[in-house]
Image (tube, rainbow, N blue to C red; front, side, top):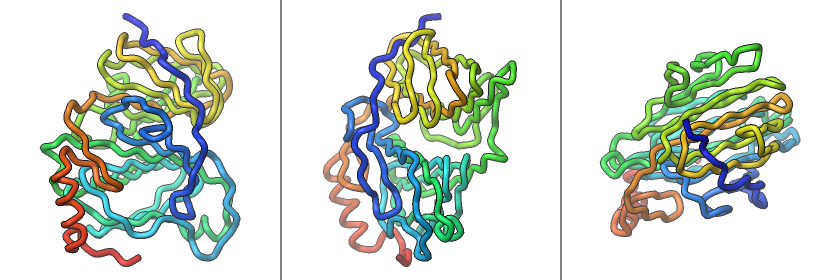
Length: 289
């Protein structure tokens, strides 16, 4: 089995604020010009301390169309409301998977109790592109609690692999996806080892959330770095050099044209113009700010 080679180990780009509650490093598409389709965007919120505050920080009401947002919490707590009546809170280890599809309004902000106490905050948000045939489908929402998440126990007390989406060692992840996607949290104890096998053409990357790892027996990557792999070979081996958390992303590229404007991700400029018009005419529903 051929080893999938590392293209680059990328350090976190300079951060920026999204609203007043999310300090993020945009690894792609803005920070680095890498192809990670079907993952269009990754904002990584490295660990930061927020002070206590009565009024929760966050991002006000805004629209999306044509893709899915996947939010993964590592520290802190994030609340969500959308114009389809979905709402929920994700705590460390939980995942919120929102399918915007034909259009939705939503808002995201720090959960009330977390806001009142403050503390560490760390998260990842992915934008997962939808195939053209699904872009105008019905919006949806999947809340995946860590306690209910499918997982694989790494032998020798090496830790565990939480399967958010896809299939690892015959264990199927919780999330329903529109294209082939593998998305895991690898939580490895020091010395823990894990092997991953993905089709050669899949776009693959590892986000090191905590700790540090050795990859394929040679190169190392520390926290707040993204490991981008090439499109040849299938096998990746990692070893935790200390207690580590790694977000594993791999998926079949969606070989379709992309047109993007702000919160809209479609296939043509005409579809972008239609999205703007539909939003301006209230077709995404209503949500109080």
